[in-house]
Length: 309
Image 1 (cartoon, helix red, strand yellow):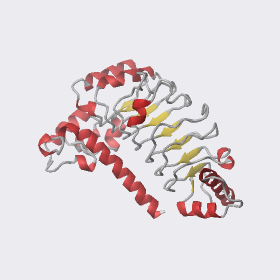
Image 2: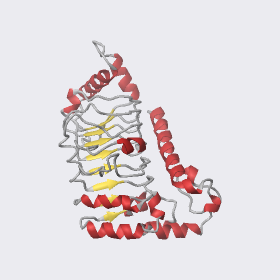
Image 3: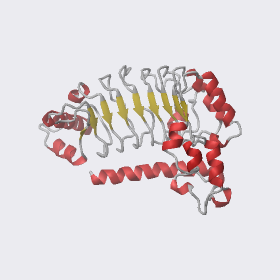
Image 4: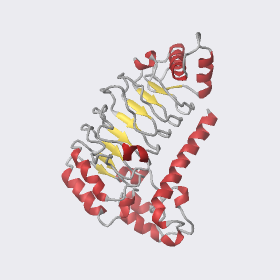
């Protein structure tokens, strides 16, 4: 029995063979990829509405007509995309772009009314955010879940001082964990997202700020819809701050518990910010060093994944 919920997976080798078989040849790489994927979906006879092109070495992507009318989920993780601006409104409800080389958030041709989930994690978007103005996510007003984990972000404001997510009134889940946000006050504009239920800001520099607890309390007070704050990410994704405290979702207590553990070497180079200055190679830049290492490790895993496929 065919599992219709499983994604239709295209490997790099399958894509290359399909591109080589195109007749007539494509006029550009992007068009060739679109036609090749359409061909593979058609000949594969899949009933799935989920398409995976992860680890295919894509440097550009354009959605074909066949895919645009059928697929609702698109997985483009661990490719080499620097931008993805050519998508027109379609049936897509979810796009995963984690682990690429994006230089800015996607700029779509028009409003994407059905898109509710977008994952941009593990892309270094630090320069893009600092140069972006209001409207960076203007075509994504229907978005309900946005993941920006480990994107090296230091601010949630664009060059014009506007809140980056002001155009996302329907957002329910926002993941900003493992970034470089140093000031808790950066989070205050988040209270404008009055439907937000899940917010993750764990493992940012501000987690060590003396005003961090007060900021969290203010967020809980002003966001009556908030159901979780950091707890999911702290429990499931971060293992460097002491097991017992992490299970309780208490970042500060976890950091204190970890102080008593054996920290004989700098953990920043492994992707976890050091908790003891005596063992750290660069204490003042520990978050930047750790998050850069985590980003590079993710890309390394992606390359290894591509080689296996």
